[in-house]
Image 1 (spheres, rainbow, N blue to C red):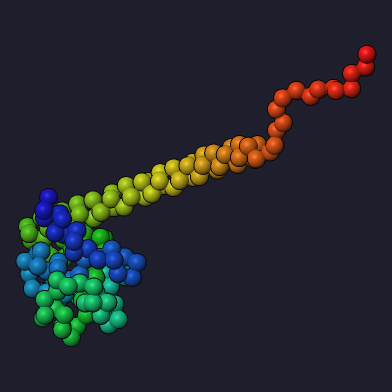
Image 2: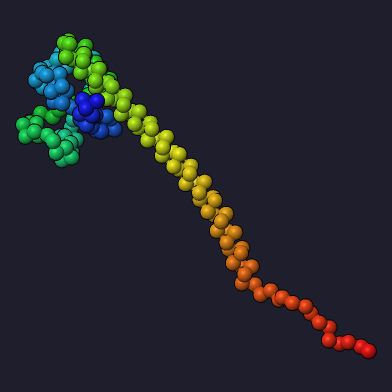
Length: 170
């Protein structure tokens, strides 16, 4: 399970996509990053934009800023990395034909599925909390109205006792 956590920790949110970067994938596949990129470039038809894209300089600068676990040679590489979506990672197993690639892809797919499940659980929990907040708001509104009614009643002067008619005729 620690492998899944390690893989999950290397899934980044970039340009609205959850992606893994080429150097992280290369490390998992136990190949050099240039070998992975070369295999992808030789099979570009298998990697449309929704499977893989190259980071812009601006996006790469943001990743460098927020990821403190990047090595110096990666941070200062003159070439921006490729970012692979879940589908792109799945496609890599057909490009990198090794047992290690198959094993790693299975682990990565499990990490993506687990991440998606966590997001679904979070959404369900968020919706339940919102429902409870609405319900409690209505209940507290009713209690507030009842208390105001009681306070208004308390403040009204109510005469207690008997009225005597003192004009008694003999």
